[in-house]
Length: 88
Image (cartoon, rainbow, N blue to C red; front, side, top):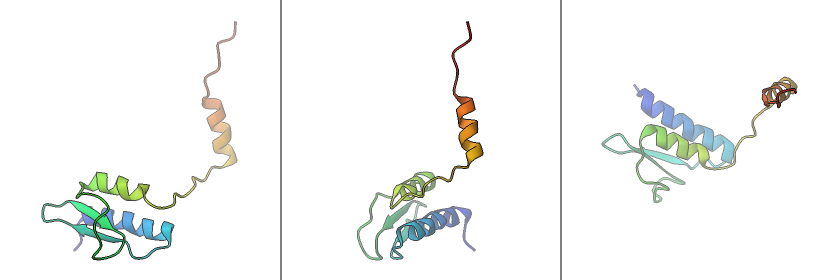
């Protein structure tokens, strides 16, 4: 059974594969529970072994980024959040 740690890390790698269109990304886990990634199996790692949270942040920063979807209501709400100067 996969641990939640490795599932979260592998999900980040799967999202990267979908964003980039490259299926060769390879994640590895060290003996002490740190993660690293390489572009293809057997190639040098792109980062030093990282803790889970740092690894997920690193993987999420790789490849093309997905544009955040914004609705008309979101835009109107953001405008309301802008602080207006007090009326005199």
